Image (cartoon, rainbow, N blue to C red; front, side, top):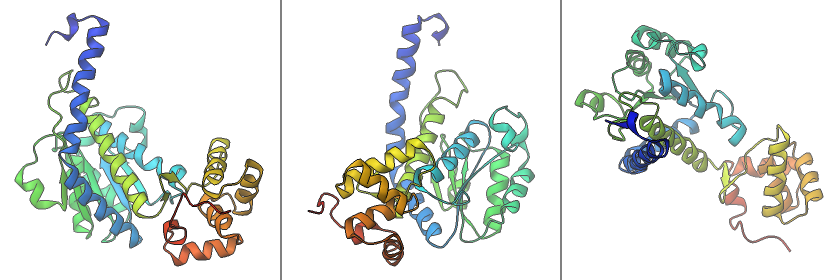
Length: 289
């Protein structure tokens, strides 16, 4: 109540003390988060998509999480998508009032040809955003499974309507109504957990390494080569060669190096095992030679 009278250090300490509550609030929702992940993985395996829908900060966080999947895990950009009220212009300039029309949400879902293979996760800190509700209603009408992420107590209608409801209760914000703070942090943590866990379940991680990345820049090339040095047990020049022969795909290069086979054979082995390196090379630590 007196944050405007505090010193800079005391403001920092107060915000930090409040932020410590966020991880525990997310932990309390771990069963629902796990349920959401199982739904997402099932949809992915059927060729479906994860589509986030939100407004303001919630919408931006959904778009952010979706945009990070292709460079990190080599996914098709359509696999995880984010919809924000007001369109992509609202990512950089707030469009107040864009969230108030449920029909806009329904139209955005219809434009994505959402169907039974998809999972649509609405994100709204208050749980009341009309744009999100309109989108979810349309998604359910199209046969998609739906979920809701909010940071207040969910009402019975919400839990009865959707396949999963995730509600980390972070408590009042340091600045009243500024849900980009604790609620935003909780939202980011939940979305990180959902997509990261889903990618692990799909075999895009080997050990704790991001092996399904596609080399598209120098940073990722360096990371890919270091992963190969660790998993295959080769020096940097050999890692560079493997990466080039694999077409810049780290996962393929690992199988090539560990089994001493060419890229086509490695891709075939991966396809036959559902993309799971662990089924081909169970022991990450057992380097050849």
